[in-house]
Amino acid sequence: MDKPTDSQIIDRLGGTTEVARICQIKPPSVSEWRVAGIPSARRQYLELLRPDAFGHLPAAKAHAIGVLVDSRMSKRALRARLGLSTDAHLAKVLQLPVEQVAAWPEEQGVPGLPQVLKILGVQPEQPAAEAAQNDPDAERVIQVQVA
Image 1 (cartoon, rainbow, N blue to C red):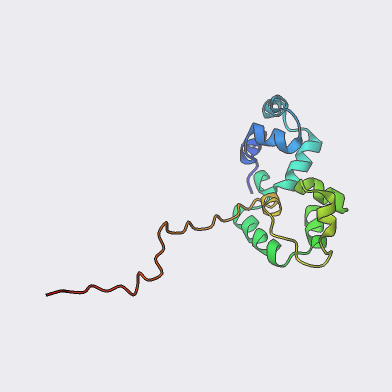
Image 2: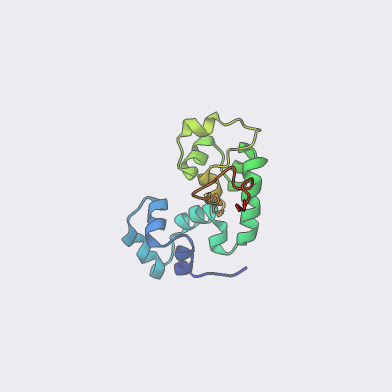
């Protein structure tokens, strides 16, 4: 595990503007953190969201966790993993309406939403682009020689 500087952490989180958006503050405040240090309460919040940016969770392990989230992790387990006690806290962290998160069954798998994967540091895989022209009979066409 490495011990990144506050500036490196901000870069790993997506840069000054992204950290400002996450914390719902203005970018100049985050710029000050690069020199003065990330305030303790903000550091705890960001570390909860993205432990990999702080060197606590390797990216490969974050990906493995993300794969498990969409298929097997319950809402209760996700809250426990993130250290949250209520659906309101989970909704705030995921930036979703409280009603939506509250509607998820407590012991069934949570949806593999981009917000859930992002919070665990996993980038969702992009679907492969389909060919522009897809001829269903392309394999059945043969060359015919005419005399």
